[in-house]
Length: 66
Ligand SMILES: [Zn+2]
Ligand SMILES: [Zn+2]
Image 1 (spheres, helix red, strand yellow):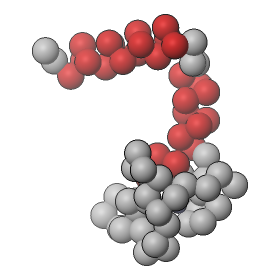
Image 2 (image 1 turned 90 degrees about the vertical axis):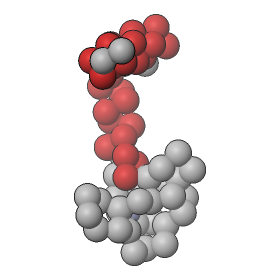
Image 3 (image 1 turned 90 degrees about the horizontal axis):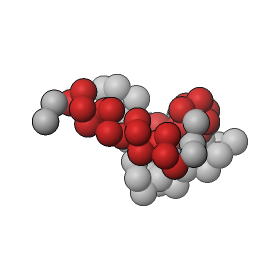
Image 4 (image 1 turned 180 degrees about the vertical axis):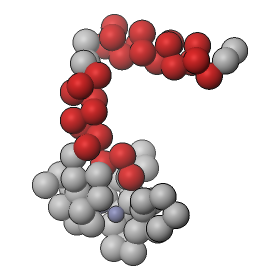
């Protein structure tokens, strides 16, 4: 299975869930009031993993929307 077909599957699942891609994007662009990074930088537990090669030094372990 190629990465593309995984992408397509996820896209289909998102579409079936009734969530719009633009809503997902807005969700992940939301900023954290603790460290200021976007939600997408936080892992599934809410802990911030930082941006690119720079780890987050805020000690943020819980995403908190602004
Ligand atoms: Zn952070
Ligand atoms: Zn944070």
